[in-house]
Image 1 (spheres, rainbow, N blue to C red):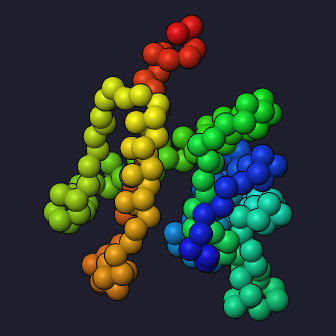
Image 2: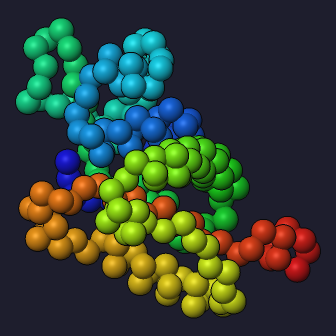
Image 3: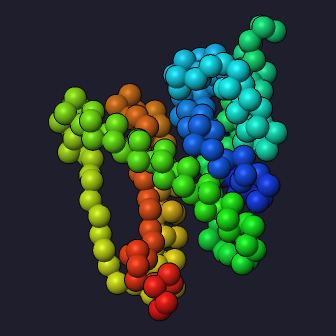
Length: 192
């Protein structure tokens, strides 16, 4: 997988407005290449539906054939990028904004499911992983400019990887779900 991020065009983003596709793309990024059949089993779907969603992801550049796997009967898929970003600039294109909002609804569904599973599995974690986990929220007063600087700083920190951790046998995938937004009802929709 390219250690890159994709910022999809509005047309590409439409392919990610379905929660199943967001889940599948995440599975391919985290767990590596898979077939439609193996993804279908993990997602509780039939392989026809899974194949359809995979073709949509491939058509829009999120995944690609894994040429190193397969035997002619099985088609293996791999993620084409490490992450997806939506960009923080807004061009006030109504159609793009509607597509972005629909995509974000799918992301919220998948993130909520992941968070729920993490809470359910927490009692099964070794103590050192329980101590390294956190379920907190912070409500702070910021200007839009300061909020953007905060997000940029967090993003830079999260994207910097320590090569020692990559090789360490104790290292595992660690999820940081970052949501940042004005407190609902305080800006915009309430007329202010």
